[in-house]
Image (cartoon, rainbow, N blue to C red):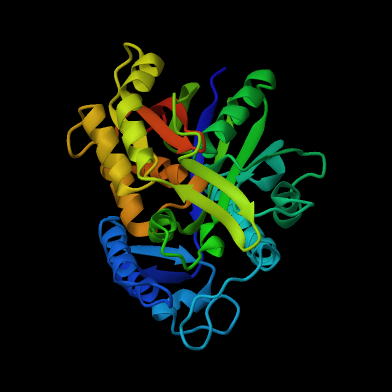
Length: 367
């Protein structure tokens, strides 16, 4: 039996930050000389992001709502410890996990009691009992539900999480797997004139997404029928996309080489994975506008091919692991994507790692 993604649900924090306002907030931070200020304007303006969501209400209205934890009353970005940041994650992340999961279950027309397995993914915080445990409690799942958590796989984690769900369904055909990714990337923002940190500050955002995966459960709407998954390590990039734990938050390195490496290697990766199968629709993780540009050029795609990825980037920014599920959600309900069309998903993680998925959209028989 073939595993299918029956529905995808999403959730974002209430606080929206406009890209131009947060750009100006960073540009006026103490310690930024004219060069750093120009880099801030260049990175933020070139991001193709219009707005992002954050759990940090202090960042609203250009940092004018500071209360002394992340932003002080003078609009200066502070440097709270990793412990302080992680405490906010532990307090705020469970609700986003739960909201996305409830939305996915509602979209699939399923009750929480039908879930047999939970797979969670996140790289922006840690606590135990973790998000997988909290979902059992918060959604009222059976206490016998099997739970798995994928940590620190970065932006690519949703595809390995879906792959794990597909493997579970292959082993247990009656399984109903709830996959949930949630990231609070903005907890780790920092004031730094370093170009890599400026780029990270210009793209990352907060959000959560969930998928219901099953090979046997009845579908109430369009589904994504999973064909296969792939994973590849590029020949370079181990030090270009790095996510480590520092004393003042998790430190993200995202160098200018990342888009270049992807641009050089993605054609070979995709050709080996896709083979002769035609691809009708693309779902590419928008790590940044330049990454999408490089993929589009290397794969010789037309300008409309990555429209769904660019739209999610513009409206939500880069929410790390949750982002590609936002794109797949949009494609799942998009009437322009018709029955039988093949969707190729690509996501990029630390290393550099390229995760891939092929799925076919299927409409319900009575549609």
